[in-house]
Length: 293
Image: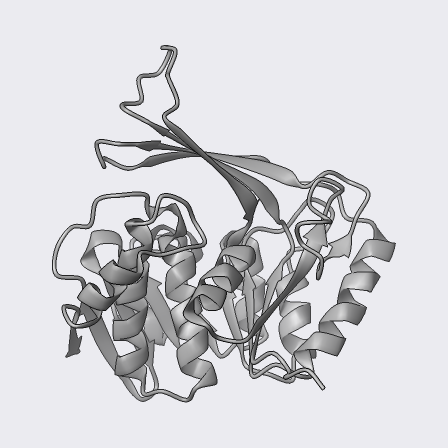
């Protein structure tokens, strides 16, 4: 008998990720691409890939169009084509430019097939990760429906109305970045006070400022040792992967937060989302500082 997966990730809007590495981005100019990375993506796929690299048991599911079905065998096949995302990374380390398509329309039959698969897989999971945008045709309370159906604690990483509706279903943890938290509140957040008003534990990523974790048991901030140049597009997903592993292994909250910040910083050092630099991870593991607020 195969060992049941400890973590289940769900990606309802999977993508074919294309990452271009160039010298410098100049709008309106022709650019020579130095390196190209093409892989299945979407936030939950990235989380699963990071967990696999860490050696942690994980199963990934979601929707996959014809271009992705053979590359995402655990996903529900759909007739619509999965979206593409294009990330342009400048070798100067100044950041990344991301283009994202909206995704395919999901039919009622495809949604029911996903629910059946989710019920089967979530029954054997210690933690469920729901992350990313929703494809057209699915209602804003889609994640709330899945949280309600899950027997395992759920980490929710999404934005806008799906996050707002998801909160009503009481996930075990939400992982907004600062922009997502601002949109959720409708104003610039007062940290950590506003996190405690949301009624669930909140792990908020703050870019170069590290991250904040607000729970009923306490509030902590963690910071990397300094700015980390590279591609930040997969850093939040690496952060979520560490949260999921810590939750599945029942680690103390400060330990979970420190590991998440170290792993997300190491992901910035990797050229494409869904991976991290192992040497940088070891380096940051001892360099991240955690303070109780």
